[in-house]
Amino acid sequence: MKRIGVKRVFLLMVLTIMGCKEKRVATKMDLSEAVLIPKPVQLNATGSSFLLNSESKIYVDSANDQFMNQGQLLAATIKESMGIEVSVSAFNEEFDSGNIILTEKNTLSNDEMYEIAIDEDLVYLRAKNATGLFRAIQTFKQLLPVSTGEESRMVEIASGEIIDYPNYSFRGAMLDVSRHFFSVDDVKQYIDYLAMFKMNVLHLHLSDDQGWRIEIRSWPKLTEIGGKTEVGGTDGGFYTQEDYKEIVQYAADRFITVIPEIDMPGHTNAALASYPELNCDGKAPKLYTGMKVGFSTFCVDKEITYTFIDDVVREISAITPGKYFHIGGDESHATKKEDYIVFVDKVQEIVAKHGKTLIGWDEVVTANIKSSSIAQFWASEENAQKGVDKNVKLIMSPAKKAYLDMKYDSITKLGLKWAGYIEVDTGYDWNPANYVEGINKEHILGIEAPLWTETVTNMEELEYLVFPRLLGYAEIGWSQDSLRSWQEYKSRLAKFKPRLEKMNVNYYKSPKVDW
Image (tube, rainbow, N blue to C red; front, side, top):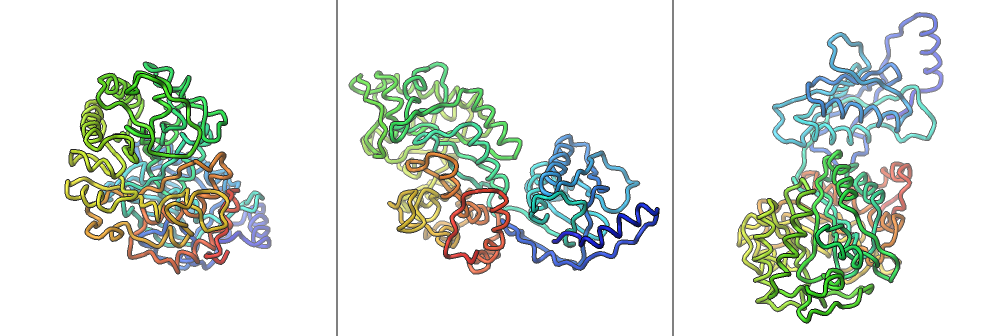
């Protein structure tokens, strides 16, 4: 991938002015040298190149309106990346070389599967549906050279074929907006980061001891009181339901599912401070701005507790098109074991009543959860195995490997270290399918990398903990296990540096990578 030489550009311009047509002599290029993250399943280089220029057009060969939308997205991507404006129109068999064709291919076996075929004359992006086409566009964007900021008249792209599909259907990241609140625009930016690397789930941690972050119209004090503050005592914030719907739609436009989490029965101080009747003694505790866990609990014996939960689940489910509802369930140290089981069993029915599939942190398997529920493994291998024994699918988020809030090393200023340090190699070099003995791929729904925000107050700090580790988690979720190795990945990650610089993210320059 490289720009056309100045002399060649001048020659082409002169020939055009003179009315002459030069048969392009394609530059020899090697597609296998493309720096792609995540790594695709199959890449075959053919040693030539395609010329993209201002005469190029995008043709959409599908009656599907979403395909036309993806054509417009690709045009915007090319304009943003290279400064080259290309038009988008319905498929026309009478077209010249130098164009890009987006086409529907129903025989592809996976909704996210795609093919990219590049020769000297044309580029084809093929997918079964718009989801796969969107994933293809993310790869195509990485085939374009990193812009220097100057507009280009033409760009050469290495020829060959890419066939690609995901390793896991669930590839997510969690953002804790409760410990520190992040604005709608911040969340949208995070969604863009996930989409760029083919992740398809955003798990929003919307409530905790330190803050309640989503409007519940039937219980308005949750945000009036519970949303006022955050860790450290600074002003908190919350999303109106319209804000939340805006986030959900923004994610959906990028083929990302939003999973809301309301943590319970523990991690509930913000709710308990808002409504005294949810406490066993009927007294509201003070708002909490510290970082301790495990001290709060809903009153499991009170019927109003379940009326409250029913209202919360109902209102959030009504504005969440995805099929999952996360109930938390972790670190409920203040809840008696027998009460915890009763509570989870009841909440499971409430979630089902509102048409959602329950997800909970791995502790929920100690209750009588149904096989249709999902357990998110973060700490207890015993719980993970119990989940498998109950035919419950697992989301793999081992804190020692996948927690984005862990420090990189002993001198990292941001983050925590209770699960250990997670350098870039530690975060990448593991396999969800053999991490826990007795648990293999058939038991696993996918992978998620959580970011807890006790120490994270703004996007610059978030980026430092997220980049470059997020890229590795994206690759674990997308790329085939047999294609992954740390030695190869760290070299590819180093070559990805220009794109990270172009993104203007505050990434950690790990000494494990030869940047």
